[in-house]
Length: 125
Image (cartoon, rainbow, N blue to C red):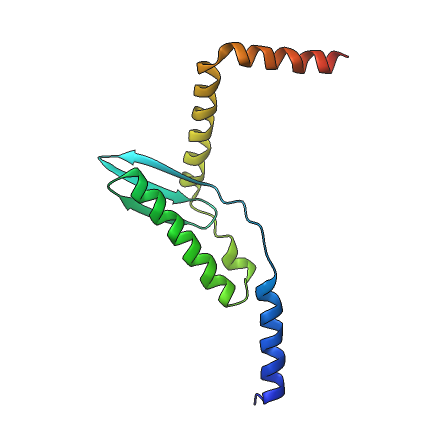
């Protein structure tokens, strides 16, 4: 049986938890396949499919916000906060990050060489 006092105590605990802020680092990506854009958040296992890049990003961000709001209402259980995607989705994310980094390095080869030289000089000293 729940009394008014215990209900107030429970509500006070929930209020103090609601004011507690948590910083999350969420990894997401959008790829184009067969004329559609597929967005994935690999940390929350959320996915969307939309006809344009802007719509896919907007919908994915909306889904993330709604998901986090729902979890915050029930007290942020850890098993719901991080739900990793399948391994294939996580590998695709990391493959895209590597491809992006290589593309950036190749588009600015002089900057890359200067940075490498500075790091080597710093290590040798």
